[in-house]
Amino acid sequence: MFTHRDLQELRDNSLKMQGWIRKQTFSPQMEKTLRRFSSWEVAELIFKVNQSTFRGRLMLDPALPSGEVEEDGRQRWFSLEEINEMRRKVKVNRKSLLPERPAGKRAIRAAIANFKGGAGKSTVALHFAHAAALDGYRVLCIDFDPQATLSHSMGLTDVNEEHTVWGIMARDLVRETDRMNRATRGAESGAALPQRRLPAQITDMGLGDLRATDFIKPTSWPTIDLVPSCANAAFVEFASAQYRHMNPDWSFFAAVSRWLDQLPDDAYDMIIFDCPPAIGYQSMNAVFAADVLYIPSGPGYWEYDSTTSFIGQLAEALGDLSDGFDGHFPAGKTTLPKAFLDIRFLLTRYEPGNDLHRAMYEAFRKVFGDRVTGHPIEHTRAVEQSGRFLSSVYEIDYRDMTRETWRRARTTFDNAYVEFRTNLCAAWEKLEETGA
Image: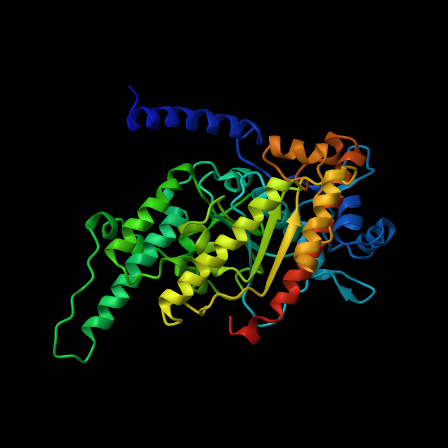
């Protein structure tokens, strides 16, 4: 006979082994570190200038970072901090190397969502975050998925569930309940209205006193921060149902949106959500807080069918929220009905030589039109290898494989990211017009 206690013990033993395995994939210090980038990568792949121009600028200005030189003296290698210092100081043809960002606007938020498992959500979120960081953007990632693939790939393995999205939601419940109780006490009414009460097991955790930044953790990338997830956060769906019972007036789906509103507008440039493979309390928080919805899907028929079901169920869920609250509720700066500035479909694991994949790509385009991105993410050996080592293609040193294999994998993500950035920047310009 096996009970939940036996399952718990099996899981605890497995988590110990998982932690050991993950640490072996990182540095000898058992911490994930970010590699340096060669002058060839910096010039041609990051700054998009030829190597002679790049080397000439370094020679003309001795104040610029010099990087580390290989023993044979042929190549210099730069840290991301050094790359960003050069980005701030150098202009090419009088053009700044700083990335595009509308002035006076908060960070743009993108949710990578689909309830089909294996659609590539975490892979897409990881690569887009790393590509954006190499592009000069400051990025905040939020891992909504209890599988925590994004968190582990970012090097965060020992995470307390109180500092995950669950903690943000519990903190919001405490603060919103206190706000409602203060409003009730301040009401000009002769009748005493009942106060909403939360159990001590919630109020005594002290989550209500945490600062907004207490949930944010640094990563091995100096310009990428993360709100991590962990396996223990899987109970958030059950906990959230209990929280709604404790305070039926709590607008649970706006908890993360309200939390993000507390961050300074210029703290980050892009905020990327990695959503769980289900429509639930966490995923609803993600899509409600997002400005742009990116929906990855594999190139098979069943994945197309699942994606269709996903957008249908998401539409019903958002419609129910809009009708239920009638457009009047405290949800930070977001209003009902929920509106996205852009929605895009992105095919993953695509093989251009596969007849079925090409046919499904055309089927996606016939149904969803220009909502389907023009650059699917191709399936390559380098992408497979990056997944095994909990790293993105951008983190892998091209000397660890043939340069052509590495370059092909990087190119497919570069193309997909450039389209992602273009779409986000177009949506960014609309933020003030929508009052977001």
